[in-house]
Every structure is written in structure tokens, then in C-alpha cells.
Amino acid sequence: MSKANQMGRDIMSKSDGEVLDLVYDKLKKTLEDCSFQSVYLNTPNFKGESSGMKGQVEGRREIAEELLKILEDNQETEYVWFATDGQGNNMGTFVLESSARDFAMKYGYTVGWWIKDKE
Image 1 (tube, rainbow, N blue to C red):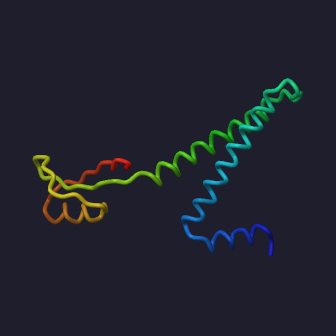
Image 2 (image 1 turned 90 degrees about the horizontal axis):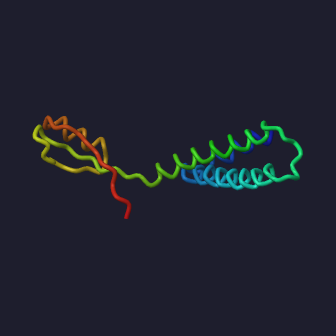
Image 3 (image 1 turned 30 degrees about the vertical axis):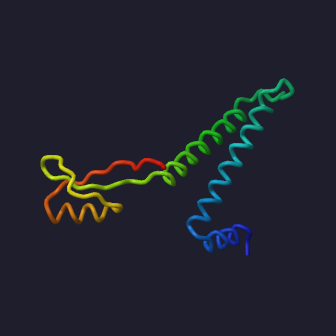
């Protein structure tokens, strides 16, 4: 069995949370590597003035930061769903969007949401 197939099997045996932890750790490691490489590439000892290598490091850093932001935002964001009548009165709050939509359809209300404050 090839190394890639074995890695695929190892990942498939993990829970979603464990896979996200692996991705998160890999992105953090990538940021550390890019920081180290950036310092090296900006020293006078670096003779290869190729902007290609600097661009590659910068690109890796940017994508790792964007992916980390997505992971961190999604893990921390909780929504509160609510149903309102035609005058904007709150007719009920819900944890699940589906519950709010079912309630709103049953009574002819509108569904809205807000982001729950982090405690």
C-alpha cells in the first residue's frame, strides 16, 4: 500500500473534529515555517535575489492565514434564530435554523438571526 493511501485511510478513521485539529495544526506549522523562511530570505546572506521564492513563501503564508481565519471563525460563531411577525415583534427564539423556519412557516412569520455573544 502506498504512503498516500495509508494516510488517506488514517484520516478516514478519524472523527471530523480530529481531522480539523490536524488541519489547524498543519496551518499553524506552515505559518511558523513561512515566518522563518521570510526572515532568512530578507537577510544579506541570501544571494538568490529571486522574487519567485519570496512570492511562494508569501503566498503560502497568506493562504494559511485565510484558512485559519475560516476555521477559527466557524468554530467560535454561534447563531440565535428568531421569528418575527409583520410588526417586527419577536415571536420566538431558537437554537436551530430549521426550528425557526418550521415555526415561521406554520404561523406566517419571518425568520431572522444574530450572532450570539461569546462568553
